[in-house]
Length: 220
Image 1 (cartoon, rainbow, N blue to C red):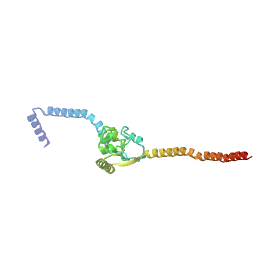
Image 2: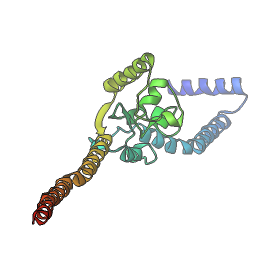
Image 3: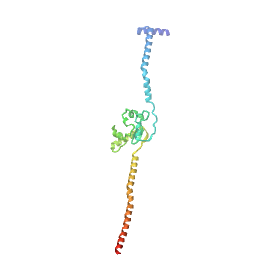
Image 4: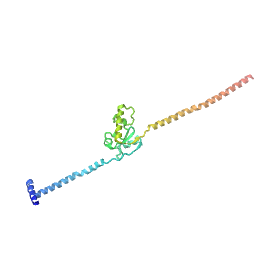
């Protein structure tokens, strides 16, 4: 049976290819070897790409709670250091936006907002440097509503990791203390007034005595 199949195969090879069975299998072996050689040559660049893909798909570390930090400290999380998370603040609340690195990371469309409290810029959808601040005074009702939508989005999608330390209150308290000290300093000369008045009264008390002495001399 096997011999009949082999004989039939040889006849078919000769009929369809015009080659002897030995020549046909030699050409077939060379073609397979050539295919593997070419695929191995071009496939050498695939493993690095595969590693890069896996690196990009590595799970992000869990968000780290920072507590209360200053705006200056927040700037360190703007994406310039790839080992640090991407942080952004809205209305003084800091969120970890590392999971949306394609938007908030370096080169992303919203990278300008990262590492800052960009409440005003988000409310106005502005990319101007002057609007990259947490000051939302003077905004219109539509801008306030837009900012509220941004805040709801961040609250539902990202983890809150801290708040921005407010330094305005400390400055006001210092100004108040200095004002009180100034008022106390101005009030001190007024406190010295009664002593001068006392001296005047003391002088006035002696004047009648001199007059009475003169009158006594005239009587004599």
